[in-house]
Length: 309
Picture 1 (cartoon, one colour):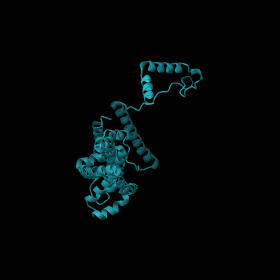
Picture 2 (cartoon, one colour):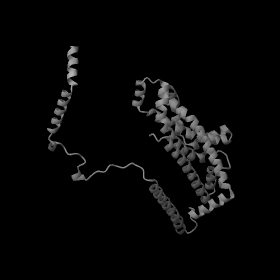
Picture 3 (cartoon, helix red, strand yellow):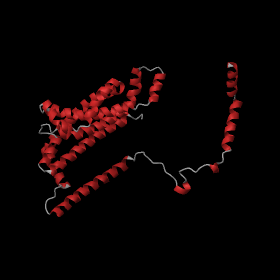
Picture 4 (cartoon, one colour):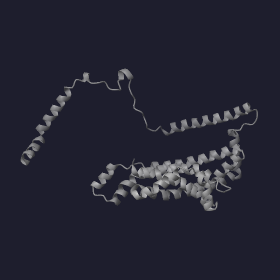
């Protein structure tokens, strides 16, 4: 019986047998009546040609020009509304105009107060962000690698992630006696939760084909972790860092409500309480520009480190 199977297999591997099967397949395809087949959905005669959606990036100069036009349009609408509100209300507009905001920027930049507030905010954001990077990456990998760790930490991560930073400011202030540690902790917690969830999902979404291939070639857990898991999750780590910067910037105002006299978050909140919207808007714009700068720096780093993607 085994000899017959071996003989049959040899006959199927002969060139003559392969050519015969190919000719039979081609004859079967040629015998198909194409007129009886249903028409495709994309019928050019009825619906016109379909063009595939292009998801590629624009050239840099096009993106810059369109972005600049958008900024100019927003400033023009803001300027126009500030003057319309004056005419409708018959008095001073509640919204400061762009020239008023620019004048406040020049005033604070010339006397150095703006740079003092900015320096304190930059220091707090960077320290809280760096501590969060150091702590969130190992915690996320441990949660993804070990099920007991995930089962233990996941309820706390999900619970704290749903609480806005303003809610635990009083508790943190009491715990740290209102010092700089309170501000670092609030920023750290917001960034830590954002980065941990993002990196954890990145590790969990590693292609299982790569994992099976590694085990097939005899890889041990250490080789799998360093050779497959870490490189595959690296883009998610960089994405998590960009999201973490956004979380740090949005939490800065809450962090600087924990007792301080310097910082852009404190400045914006204080001027808003005093209804000085010209200073308030100026501080918001400076804070936003600082956040964009940090995001662009991380984006450049991400592009340089993930060219292999």
